[in-house]
Amino acid sequence: MNNLVKALATVVFVVFCGFSDTQAQSFTGEWYGAMDVQGMKLDIVFHIDESEGGYTATFDSPLQGAFGIPFTSTAVDGANISLKLENIGASFDGVLADELISGLWKQSGSEFELVLSKGKAESSRPNRPQEPTRPYPYKEEEIRFTNVNDQIELAGTLTMPHGGGNFPAVILISGSGPQDRDETFMTHKPFLVFADHLTRNGIAVLRFDDRGFGESEGDHSIATSLDFASDVEAAFQYLQARPEINKKHIGLAGHSEGGLIAPITASQNEEVAFIILLAGPGINGLEIQKQQIESFGPGMGLTDEQITIEKRNVEEIAEIVRTHEPGEQLTLALTQFFEEKLGDMEQVQGIPREQYIQAQISQLNRPWFKYFINHEPSDYLQHVRVPILAINGEKDIQVTADNLAAIEQSVMDKELITIKEYPGMNHLFQECTSCMMSEYAQIEETISPLVLTDITDWIQNVITRENK
Image 1 (cartoon, rainbow, N blue to C red):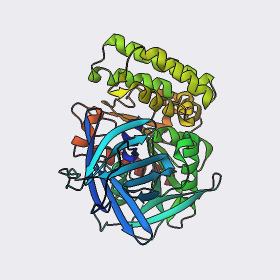
Image 2 (image 1 turned 30 degrees about the vertical axis):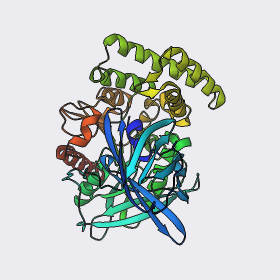
Image 3 (image 1 turned 180 degrees about the vertical axis):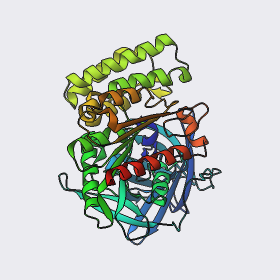
């Protein structure tokens, strides 16, 4: 799904430069640079401030629509600067010389060379006509709620129409990887646009930062989809306690992995009124990976034979992950696998061999991955007893439209489910041309207005039927 590209919004640096005289030089100010990530130019901006209490810093990734992301700690010692983003296990150590900060982004074993200067970046934020601007024609409230089981506080935004209350409500559930409440991705903010449309049409919306990201507490790196489902349950309980919300009309809408999480919560909570699956998986994570290889392969120039080999590789990796305990045992087994597969290759996709292996193992050793490849959506969908809307873009290459049939088959009462496939649309429900991920940021549209209208109409129809 979105893991690799989304992770770059929070990638960090480690430097291997020497020392220099820093007289008349200062870290304070705005620093601009760009790095090459698999052929894509990714602009990065540092904002570093100094006060009596020391230094603070934030960074922007304009291409991904991520701005003002705070480092959890900033330390300066002469020419050296150390930045940490502890909630996702990221860090940056840099050296200032000749008005340049030179170093490497580093996270999960991946490194990208980066040089930052105080020269203004040429790039500007792309046009996003669907993003609303304040003042909004509805109420907006910054809220916090607690996942009592895990003892973490989650932060989000609640938007509600003006008026007396008794509003139906929807909780938005983001896709895989650390996500903010707007599901910011490739310069788009889908959940901001989605929430705006629903609230303008009389439906309250709660969207929140994933655990361990943005303003939410917790550790995202050790969480699985079950943990995220418990966060959604906590959001549901929060809404039930709000007097403005109609307790009988609170539903869930999940995008990508969020479409896997929504049925988990709904199957365990009979008070959930409805669920919406936007490009949600209908099959286990291993099969999703194989579908992705088939979808991405031709665009990456892979032959049919190479696609078959790659599918076999992910099957072997899944078997290793399934049969080994996380930690040292799994690391050794995966290292042996990659060493054998790579043969004499010194680089993979332009990445040094050892660095590539470490990056892969770092991801595969996470509890999330083991859960993902084993999770069968049907185990939960078959227990959902409320209306379900499942939609997909025909050109989606991340979670293909084939998943709709699997979702429909898993639901016991077929009268509860509505299925719709949108021609010519991608994973974000944008009207697309190549429909590859690299095109997402080039498209001005964030979500097709047709999709937004269809979802709103479906929710209102469900509520009308339930009120009869």
